[in-house]
Image 1 (cartoon, helix red, strand yellow):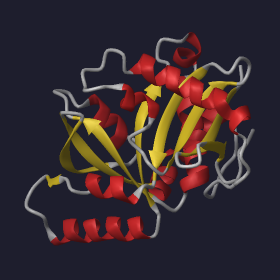
Image 2: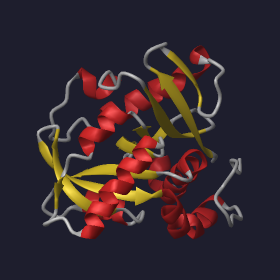
Image 3: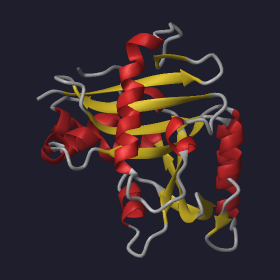
Length: 232
């Protein structure tokens, strides 16, 4: 069993796909990543009660560019876990127009200033469309390894960033609790896809410090500082 992760950047304007961190177009060689993610997203959200249309699955809501992270089995490229993230300032600004949980304090205002500052530095991203192949035997047997592979891959490309995530507000808030395990903090609420969502903020370096021990154990690697290359 070999679980790997890959991140590709999709340029919506030029209709090209290449490995994250490079400028060499390799669209034809990387289409399997997009196809695997698309299939997984449709499967994962098939029974989720939110407003969905083709735009939810084909990423046409983003006019600039975005990243697709895919964790998969290297033996047959079975997709196991995927996520989308982007730095689009227009989309991010709309996500920052959330309702505060209470009357904004000085700390809340400082946080909002920090988020906008990171946005202007291109150091703030939003991660969404997380999809798991939860019914697949490989995912069920190696769930912790799959999650660690995703976290490690994300750290490789976003190590000095802040990030925003949205979690549907539910009676037991299971999704919110999962995000909080990564060190994310609820900072407000916003209506998205006709549903009320928690807005959560995370810091990649803080998340890494929180998770690096479990990542090292699950991936069987020795890590200390922020990662600079893949262990596989």
